[in-house]
Amino acid sequence: MNKKILLLFLIIFSLLGCNKNNNNGVKIWRFAHEEVNGSVQDVYVKEFKKIIEEKSNGKIQIEIYPVGQIGDATQQTELLQLGGLEFAMVSPGNTGTIVPENQLFSLHFLFLEDMEKNKKIFRESVALNEDLTNKYLKKNIMPLSYWAEGFMQWTSNKSLREPKSFRGFKMRTMPSPMTMASYDAYDANPTPIPYMEVYSSLQLNMIDGQENPMFAIEEMKYAEVQNHITLSNASLFVTVTACNPDFFNRLPKEEKNLILDTIDELQDFAFDIQEKLNNEALEKILVTYPETTVETLSSSERQQFINKSKTAKNKYIEMVGKSGAQILTKLENEIDFINNN
Ligand code: 6CS
Image 1: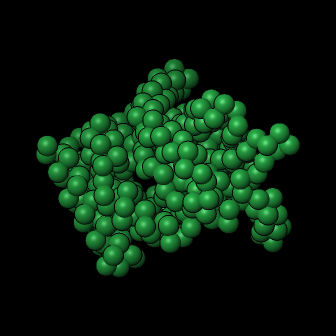
Image 2 (image 1 turned 120 degrees about the vertical axis):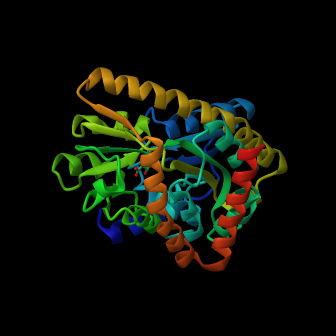
Image 3 (image 1 turned 60 degrees about the vertical axis):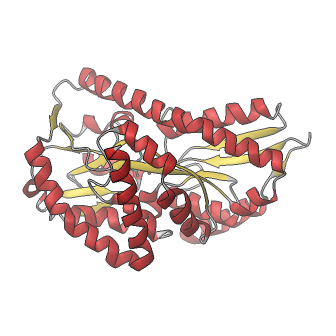
């Protein structure tokens, strides 16, 4: 869509007003996510809708917009900031230019391979839930929770077991500069492409590979055009459930509590659903595309990637300065603490 038309569309959409009421006095809250029907975000948002509508006895209704319906992920975030959406999924991989500090999520080997411990980190981290949240609030985005949709796995048409196999490899990434820098560290050629164009770009050999959680590899049919999957567990696909702060601050106390309680209830649900969909996805891929080679990095191969990825961390510090670096150090300490206790 032409940029000017899109901007006009966004302004009109936002002027339609926050916290819309329909004719029966029912409140409508709009919630955009970044994925297709049946995805992890879609299941999460539908559960949010179910709980809110039930608990409000139908006085609040949630309208869901999957990706593409009102623009791409970055445009949806802009709309949330303007107040044209009450809620949106705002993944750091799509919003690193809006909240640069959130790019710590693109660092490889920051989180643990134990998802139960990662879940605890997301719930308890002060670095995330207070310090990083304050950075989002400055951009008129209110994070309600940070969570993960699974480990990012690599797809390709060749083996990717060592950093040197990435030399010159055209790796599709999400648009955050730090996501690209993480692959620069392996001497790859990172190429940002919108989510809905990844399949055709792989098919046309415009890119050599991409990273995503297993559920996305399956539902976006990447295995149709890629015959290798490398289980690297190098990073997590992190997302943020967010709302517009002006909308939230204007709500009566009971509606604020309804939202906060629902988000709290959904935190475990989110991790359960990602685990289920990711496990089922690998099984489905192997049934539908039995020629797929699935490789897991050995610990010495993993160590080579860990060593190489250190330069990317310096890049993050260069990009975000002192306050961003402090958030990262605090988070690293929290991760160590949870890992060792
Ligand atoms: O790769 C992407 O761009 C997308 N991947 C997922 C799993 N969710 C949304 C995101 O935009």
